Length: 425
Image (tube, rainbow, N blue to C red; front, top):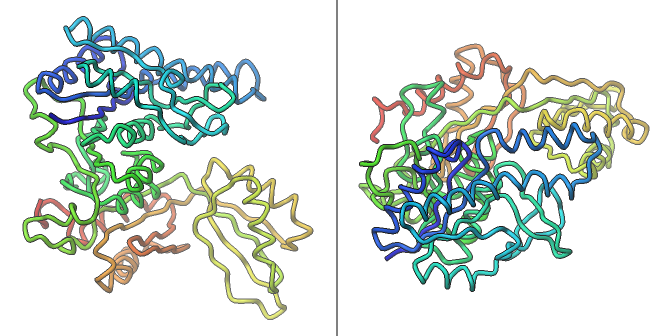
């Protein structure tokens, strides 16, 4: 018998028939003798609808009341799934975020989970009852409902799995696993059997949409084995414990390939993100503290900065500084910089939203030279200009014109031997 957390996203819960299909899938796990907790998202499109109501009511809405409104979507699907399970003969009950409770901080609309009380939940599961838990929501210390930010149900599921010491956290979504890149761009992209926490964290942070970044970071911290698999398979599909999807695990387990060598695959995947904006400040004084003056107001506005380039100083003692921010934060970034213009001392503020970030990720980079060279050479041969570069131990990212994104992804996928016909599955 295993203890399993199953998470179903909005497309899986989009209507009663799909909820019944989810109930049938959960029943299979229960009939196999497993203890099951289910975390659910709101129906597809429901959160957007509720957010729209908040904006219509007031453009300056209270974040605390916003959370009350948008948390309702998951409450509805948790109750409906519990009803569907009961109708299928499976003992089940819903547990709202405040009933467990799932304790969070008070950062409304982007709260972080502190701890989850599991005594009552564990007792219910041990008695054979399926626990249905709404994702995305929690409870602040002052008793107010909180939400975790978009995609937060993934984080809820991992947190619940960590709290109840689950054997596995299965994330059911509209894709059947993690691929070497977006198969809509590269039809020969391969589904990966295993990916390390670090690789998935990098892939999620640079544009892969399969899992929320925070959920991967939490899984790595708590060593929760996470599996990504499709909820859109027939009733005769293999059971989840036969690993039909992609497992997100520690490096040691991920390295247990046919030859037992984690370095067998140099590059794990290629991600892209068009939600980037480039900002350049011209003629910034080339003196100590100048760069700090640029990024302090951005940090104060909670704006994340990614790639940073400082050019060689001009003859007259000034330099240009270029960096990227999420495109959604561009307006706030420009406002913060313009307000600090006198203290920074720049001449001109230039921005460009027609850019995209393309990244190659793989733990094999730690022990192999030439990864960046291959990337730069491949792009150069096709005349793709690199505007900025950032690296980590297992990632190389470049900023290019957005119109060249798909070409770059296809060329790099082939260059690193990731095409299905060129590499072992």
